[in-house]
Length: 146
Image 1 (tube, helix red, strand yellow):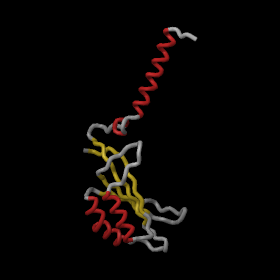
Image 2 (cartoon, one colour):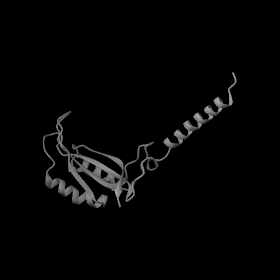
Image 3 (tube, rainbow, N blue to C red):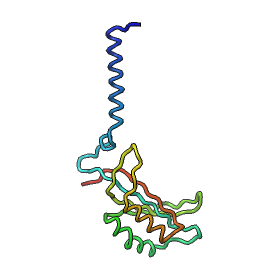
Image 4 (cartoon, rainbow, N blue to C red):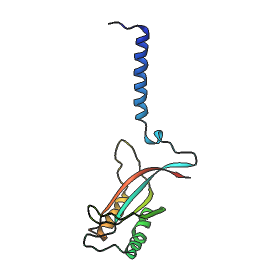
């Protein structure tokens, strides 16, 4: 089966468009979602602390303030924003406090990023003080105001 020159050109253009689409998908996240002028790319650590212990006790505000002043602020050494999340009842009752802090880390949509040592250190300290309280962390790519 022979192709006309017009059909051959369409095939080359179609393959070229497919290749261009694959190259665009292989770009790093910053190239796909550039930050707007006046902002810069950054990585935030989101750490969620469980405040309701399985035995029914709560992590008190005084305990939280002590943990924050002894561990969070000195280890992360950056502006920390915190908020209390709405309580959940399933699979078991839990209250959580979430913090966001800028960290030095790389982020790629292709591979899970490793948590920086400072974040792992905070999680270990939380577990040492409150062994039965859950803690989890993840990294978030963001654009921050300059």
